[in-house]
Length: 296
Length: 296
Image 1 (cartoon, chains in turn yellow, purple):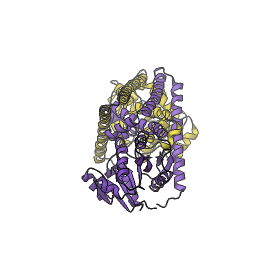
Image 2 (image 1 turned 60 degrees about the horizontal axis):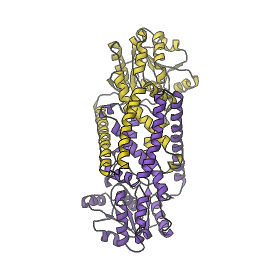
Image 3 (image 1 turned 90 degrees about the horizontal axis):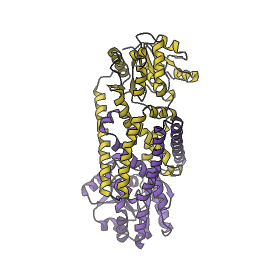
Image 4 (image 1 turned 180 degrees about the vertical axis):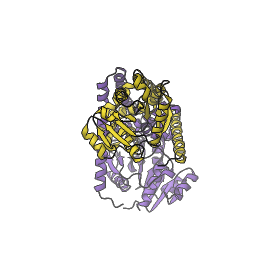
């Protein structure tokens, strides 16, 4: 399988990892990175994530067969529109944005873009940003949600499925709205909580912090502007997720203030059951990955 | 350095790790485990955490030079009292409880116990419990807080310092009340949050969860009864820590509901700064550990 010339818009952690994976797996004839910062683009090329770097969209998109938009979520719809305008007619445009509903809605308002775009969210990443942290194996075993609309050509969706599967993802299709509600709970809430926890603990207590604080605040090191855009793009589902969390914390506070040992143990036990269910599911997915055929 | 006969009360993850570390480092003539479940005690002995197992406190404490109480926090003060009554006059009793103020207060009401007890909290552990997860290196590089009172004999405190240092800990002295307030923030709050997060996310969203949820809920797999006791023992400081967290979450919710990009970025940036300060401090501690003399 070869996707020909692939253009990557935004060559940071995610875009750089797409480039590394394409080149490592021999999936592209040529990987072209498009960005604004020539220093960062040169670094991406030197690190092996790209064959060529461009700052001119016309040159980057003119011969592209696939465009992968890896810019911050607030910019993705515009970048998709530009790729659709400047690229060849049979282009596939996909993205890697952590939110989907508003991006898909904005793209749908542009008929040319809507005809070539399949929204995607490879659920992989790191609290670190920048191409220097990009890795060819970032997507291996990760879920990648595709969010085609009823008007997305099936041929484009199939090609997007092939593309993200080829990078190592387990591809699932989901309505953009359902994606955003699930991700608000599974990712955006944990990120907000990590930052709230980091912000709650004064540095004077750091010397006595151990694993729970270390792991619970890891993603608070992520880029503030990236996460601001994600939260704002997914405002209502994130507010709903916060409500669910508040109910849990209110229950905990009430049980603790009332000295209710049995209630606290039961509250913790329910959370523990959920955590163990998550671990079981992850183990089952890992087992099915390792038995599936993968030439890499 | 050799501490003679060391009795460990409660041979689970922590007690078992104390046993392994003592034996691996040649710090005891004999390591005796005291417990109620002979099957678990036998397992601990077979795994190499103990030289001998006892279910009779008289036999376990009669010849002990050091007793380490590793039972759940709600039971520690009683176990310290029993060891003080049954052990030789020059005994040292220390513990490994995650809370300190109420334990130290209860022990202080018993003159014999108060004369031989030095409260300790080695800040190491795991969401897993049971001697099968115990490790000789669990305490290496961990902080261990000692909470002597003004009436604790200095000789006992010095011996406790030597004991926990010999197991690989970086020992610090702190008032029991200050310990509990710091740990409410650095450990008990992160644990409560992990459970609240695990409890907030339905299993239907698990397939789309990645690193932030995985790491943020890790400690929710811990034992419900152990954590119920810790929260209840440290009720007021944990409620105060929850208030601090609520302020952070309220700020986040207000900024998000108001669509305040600049405010969100600033809120996240402050949390990020705290997280990076924590990482810097951990790195500095690790560097100082690696240059300090340790024969093991």
